[in-house]
Length: 286
Image 1 (spheres, helix red, strand yellow):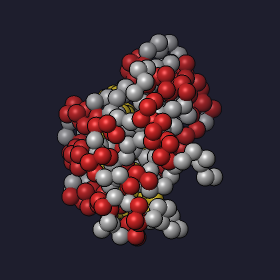
Image 2 (cartoon, one colour):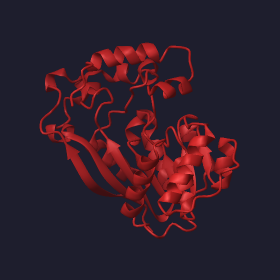
Image 3 (cartoon, one colour):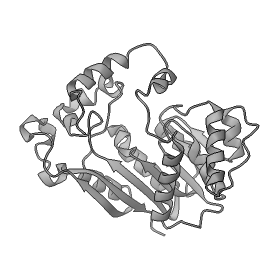
């Protein structure tokens, strides 16, 4: 269903609201500026159960290390991974995960109803205690977080609509770090959303590079790196990965007129611009 709020009004609203001097938890409670849906029990489990089989690790997680990029509002992946005998490393650009432990206890009960055996977190009182029970790490310094992870120590990396949010100037370095920490033969599974985050179109391509990549816009709550499909595939390959493209999602026609796009995208083909999202597996050669 088409949104009733025009994209440009969302831009102005988010610019203004992002400057209000309140913490992220306040916006989180209002459902604004939220970082995905990983605080919803069924969504977390569905995402986990999509990426693990896609990576060929279904039934093979015992003793493995899983790295999730962009866990967003929850550390729930750590609890799911522990159910299968795996440990999780969660990397994000900030400490966005909810700290209300009652939500994680409810999630553990949900997993039990699904026939899984989560670690006992009934006595946990802090996020750190939940993480300790899962033998998990939660790192919140973005790209810098990788420095604490050893080379060739991670079996699986996954993300769900996260790569498009990695700052453009850090994207290739992030891919290189992912390649470094993976074991030989390791795999990364990503779902990438190339739509703008202003209504599911390409209105983010209307802005010049100078304006869009400015600190002012980056901090306004609607940033995506605008890296298009073919360029992103090239960056994966340049980082060293063997790329396997899965499902590709497309618009039936360009959602924004070409003449409305910034000059930065003049030379991007219609075919490339028509891709609204895709799934990809990145393998590190044995």
